[in-house]
Length: 358
Image (cartoon, rainbow, N blue to C red; front, side):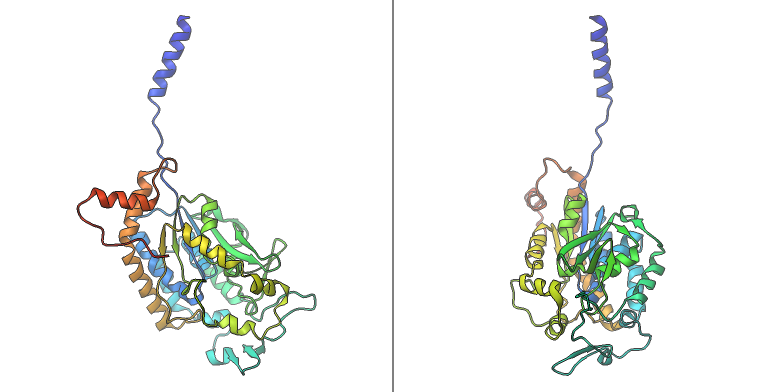
């Protein structure tokens, strides 16, 4: 009996010396799609870094997949700014060293042309959707700047990463977690009709924005407790839209079954609105004056500046988020909104910011 008591006392003594390991909340950064507007995300990233908020996961769609992949590979916002402002992006996408935007895309009222080729009937003999531009030049650039070759697990990057594409046949969102980084980023930005799809693991992949343009749900599935989302969309789906570049093209194109189903059901609408609700910090820069092809140097510089301005406006909220994630664990915690309200009540100095309007 004495031995049992002695054994219990030893266990109690050992247990008293065990230090509890605090596990802070995990933060996911979600970067939405929007073509050239992605330059604004670079500006916002500067403020996120300034706030000190630890980023544990990054998810990106389309241009957000490119920005996210570069960020997870270790490229700083300043380095990305240099990249954005030093490349002939339209020429890279089109595979042209010299180009004229008016020659690259034009329409005669009945048929639209991209790089001199009619967009009418871009379906292969077996019914597969095809595109005009192969994007080889952009893959080469991404290969060079990432320094990656071959297949890799994206969890092995400096920050775990998911690049979101869409399966044109099943209309499913496809978060890519493994593969050649440059090829996966290229798949995520493969705008139907414009770029050739990417065949990967038996799937035909196109631009992830077709289904999931702000993939907060993917960040949540990775383990994010709180989410920062940078949304480049300039109109919510509940609002009437003007015709976009792609919509004008699709009116004159034989779309094939996949895109016809997408147009008929628009599964992206509900996914998008649900994902906005998941974001704890939602940043939506005003980029109405810039289209998805606004890759001119002056436009890129202006959009980066707009991103910086929005990031600075969100800095008090980001600083508060940093306090929140360092203070709480996943269990038994208030929501971020409740935490902000608690902090407001606890101080006599009001915070001069509001939660973003979604």
